[in-house]
Image (cartoon, rainbow, N blue to C red; front, side, top):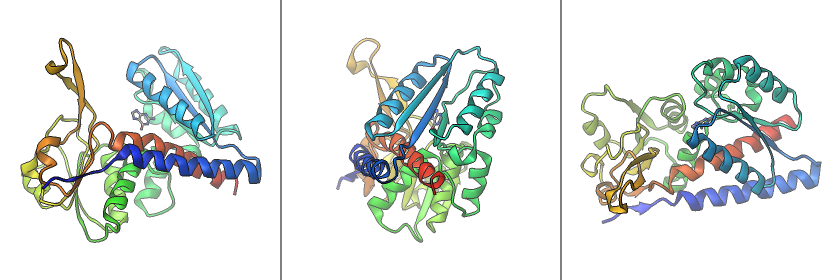
Length: 291
Ligand code: GUN
């Protein structure tokens, strides 16, 4: 038997369409346009691609997009000044400072400077604490997208055994909090976990977010489990000719698809949900700000 392939692209398109409808309603009924400011410091090629597609999709759902590009050698004080201006700007409901920042900057100081109500990444310590204590919070976009895919696939997650592989602040830890909030029994595994395969084999839900291409193989998967692959790893692909590459996840798709009940592909799984959830968070921030 082969798993159901969870079509993240289609889920994300549906979510963006619902957001676009709500944006139109806000404009028509209240004259409010949600606005998202994205700040990019330096010229990291991958970050430039992300920022461009965030800007395009923001405009596509009818929101206002404010892009700020700063040179790689910009002093941190200048970035903090910009964040303060965006905090005070009523047309800006969401602020995202693209990471990683250049080495001379203190990421934590920059994130802390963002107004938590506009922190659409959900990285501010206040949002991290609110999520951990069960209060309304801005939730990081990638785990939020994973949760939506899981709920759409399984319905209620209550009582299910889940393993999150990876303990990053951006994905692993908030993912575990969200699964716990939905009453899963959650194990957080990481690079030092003993008997990882055995732990994964017991889980009805597997979320892989380690950044190791193809690490989770089909023989680790419990038959019928739901597998969410957050990894986006570029690997050599000699079949594509000299210098060819392709994207693969943290799960070895070809072996896992034969055992799992449902699985996300890479690309086309979690990735498209991340930007859609950024727009959802911006809409939420706008609605909260406007009462
Ligand atoms: N860089 C890679 N992913 C992210 C993200 O989700 N948010 C921000 N701000 N930077 C990133």
